[in-house]
Image 1 (cartoon, helix red, strand yellow):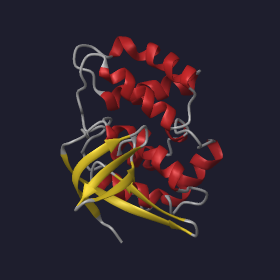
Image 2 (image 1 turned 90 degrees about the vertical axis):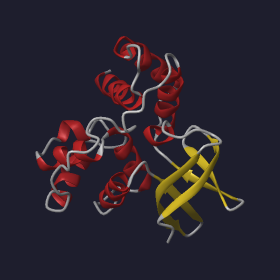
Image 3 (image 1 turned 180 degrees about the vertical axis):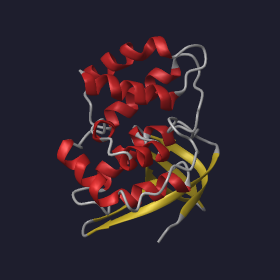
Image 4 (image 1 turned 135 degrees about the vertical axis):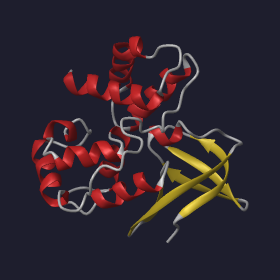
Length: 202
């Protein structure tokens, strides 16, 4: 299995990054928060998890090992596949996920696209004894606290929401709803989470 990928970022799409490793371009499926930390032409090291299916091999990339471990752990819960697992890591930082599961916080888990109340209850039941306690790292900032230029955050949050399955119209409404929170030094991860909260209330 491929534990991590190190190389130059060759390209970024709405939901993936292509990393040049020894002349081979590896495509990694990534959350918006992880993509926001990458820049084309710059070196990057990303922990990875490979999902093997009969007809495909998909490599997922993460901002750190903690996010990777959460992605792999939540897939051990019934009904959680790679797509939902990635949505979980996009919406909830590792410690936020630990707190939600540890405190039976169904409401927080249902903010994730693809997880309803029953699904959230099942995840809590199956993972509560294995999720562990919060570590005190990166809580509330899936992007690792990345600060974006004045208006660049809009495009990054828009791409993130569309990548998670929301329509362009919904994404634009959510961005307008959280625009007043951006300030002079926008935090893409925090704004993405705020936009998802706005959409979950709509």
